Image (cartoon, rainbow, N blue to C red; front, side, top):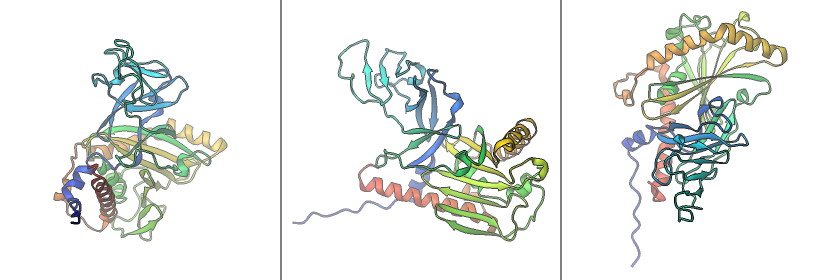
Amino acid sequence: MSATLTRPAAITDAEIRDYLSTGVRNRWWPVLPSRFIQTNGKPVGLTRLGEKIVLWRDHTGTIRVQADRCPHRAVPLSRGLNEGDRLRCNYHGVEVGTDGTVLSVPGQPGCPLEGKKAVKTYPSQEIAGAVFVWFGDALHEEPEPFTPPPQLAGGEYEAILCYADWEMFWRYLYDNNMDPMHGTFLHANSHTMYQGDTQAHFVTRDTEKGFFFEKEGQRDVNFDWSELVDDNALYVRLEIPYPPSGGPGGNFGIISFGCPIDENWTACFFWRVRKVQGWQRDVWRFLYRTRMEPRHWHVLEQDREILQGQRPGLEKFEMLYQHDAGLIRLRRHLAQVARKQLTELRAAGKA
């Protein structure tokens, strides 16, 4: 008698919404600016993608990222001490090494906990002043390579990081950045976004790792286009034209990531980039810090205020039109990614 094969149940839309409530797995996400983590300094506890993690620098200056949970009594390791090559829990002194192995149990030397790899450790790297962490699912614990965009790799570009936590569902930041038309209205009083047609027609253009969403027949006038990139990390790239008074470097670029904290809060990363080198790099940085940074925070605050408190599920109240084609395609892409990941996990008995 042959065995009957049972096909895994199809993934439902409700399961996809639940899965995406705290982000997309199998991606690199920026979790915190590097400057907040000091060598041999206090461990820092965070929640990212709904997971509690602890960040610390060991005595070599290397960033370590682990589950924020002591394997003994499950209290936060971030409330413990950084001993240079290990974290020591303050509760009972249990010591955990950089790879998650329990190195010492002072209260009971030689107990079975010693030598056990009992704390999850996350792959991490530092890019452009931020700590990036790989959040893989049960089938993808080993990280895929991530090549940052040229604007964040140094060389011809100068990148200045702006960071803030906003109270909103993470995907709404991506929706906002894939909606160039909002710049003409919400940011109409900005010194760089007051020009351009308020009745533009948009088109999409595929790329190898995403797509452009852009105004047809208008370029370098306003916030005229956005590019979604999903290359083992999910981010949006855009440019805003600058007048000569804005200093050297041509258009003002933004690389934006919205790392989910939980379903209601987002860690927002905005890299401000200009193509400048040598003395022009120094001029641009001086102009930014002394004249332009408050203006940019003012524009960001307009976005924050309009999105503040927005919870998941608002889509059922929306009535979208042609200007929204970019965010519609973004949402479709995320749903496809989630469906694929959930299907693979279910087939492997991991979901």
